[in-house]
Length: 363
Image 1 (spheres, one colour):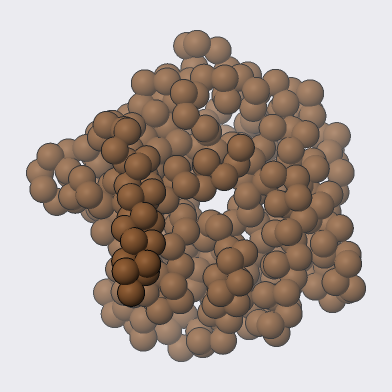
Image 2 (tube, one colour):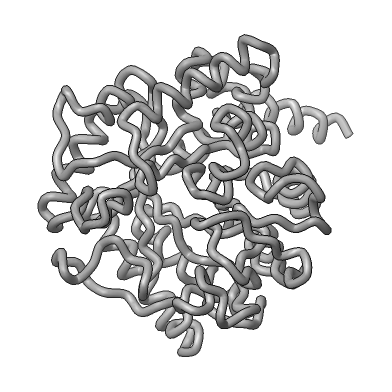
């Protein structure tokens, strides 16, 4: 009994150490991950300002600028990307998450057209032999490590419930209609990434595979189509310690929360993911600029709800619509929420501790 008590106290102490060494500004900055424009950066670049002055915790690179409608964003060639990620990392006083969506198939920002190797889609990999999934994870991991990335927003843990789902099944992003097969493929792909010191991120919790619409374009209701079987990949990968980072979905499910979509739902993130499934790793939101959020919630309200729900990192892709000052604005909103007593500093410190535990493991 006494030994268990000492162990519990030690765990609490180790969890608290990162937050004890950081001020509020730093902790808030680490909770933000943002996109930006440019193939290169210098001291005058807004994203360098954000890393330096606002302690930005992470960045995400894209090859296509959605708002401008053309493939001119951050990715041109392996040499250019390596120099860009090196310069971004050099500006950070704390470890920086440098992330990209590199799933394979239709969703790979590092494309053969820019000089990078191609990866088959999850659907193609899931239909083949296990070894092929592992090799794909290793290949993606090597590519990302060589280019200076340490986070891949992949693999998809969505179950292919609806093959015509526009954001998942229709474009081959799910490994399988069998949740157990999805769990196995996710584990193999994550292992391949981890061998190359790249953190994988399961998405989109609690399951986007039954959605009949795309949450980039508006709110998606899966109340009648979602089932608990879609939690199986998460339950298995949390249970065996494989899941290190999980991304939420902007889907609405009245059976799980009659008021809020998953990203903004305390019932879903804290109640199901953390309490029921026992997950204590990092939770990152899907892009807070997606219309499923922006069409229904103001920026301050969405940020407050996501933090209250249990999200640790708020992702602003800054691509669907671009704002060079999105980081200082979001940082200021969170700081004011703390000052006004709407979000506690202890809640900020909790997310900071989770983030720093994961970053400490990148060394």
